[in-house]
Image (cartoon, rainbow, N blue to C red; front, side):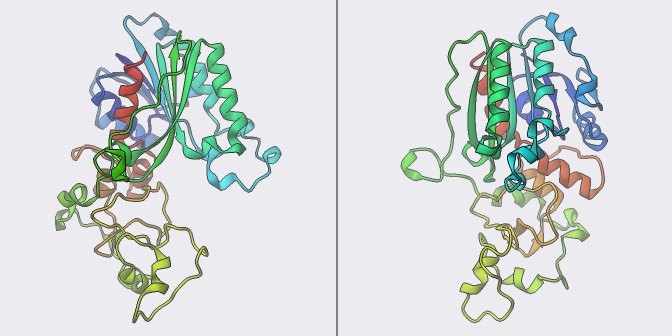
Length: 338
């Protein structure tokens, strides 16, 4: 099945699509570093364009032989939790230039694929964003697609990370929505699925001095002492529960929940952030910041995947990506129902 990838980023969803059996024929990404990353990991059969999706035409794909799907994760800033406090009439999500839902639909209307898969943040389903989500679904239905809106946790699909994302499946010609994808793992033994995976085995290959990064060190940092006393699997709030601890404690709720968060080797990670603050986790249980290949491993990128750009750019690419195994499960589910 042919696949057009939009807002491709570093290619997490693309890697998943390939693993699901799709062939990426065209990928579009605006960020230059991320577009170079795509080129470093793709073959000559994929057209990779570093461009604004809004400037490109996709009518040529209407005549493609065989089945085609469109996948992508438009920018999520307009729908993030950071905007909840703003009154809806002031947010004007539909007028936000970063809101590319309409461009995704335009590509669908021009390429006329057999189905599509859109990925976005969990908060797309928040009441504040209901108007934008409902408008997207209604517009897709006008184009002849029936939509399924599903919430998925990456940890349920073999990713060692608790990361919730919304997926919208669109199938052409169907009169009923397809079922939600079935999870493969669970945190509740009563569900009958294998348990969520911890990060230990995913990080182990990158624990040698070969992968050392100067930026991983916390020695002499503002909160070094506090970080060293946080137990694995906990955050700053654990400090006021410790016996014999002498150091700063913090008012509960006074910091973001990922402040000083330290990984537990046998538990999934919290969400890998694209632009974490200096003392925002997850930190390694060995009291250091994560190395780039470790963050990529938690996102289930292949071990030999190449990233282009500065350390900050690479972190952004990794943090913005769809975990590859989650992408594989979602694309496979779409392909099974188109």
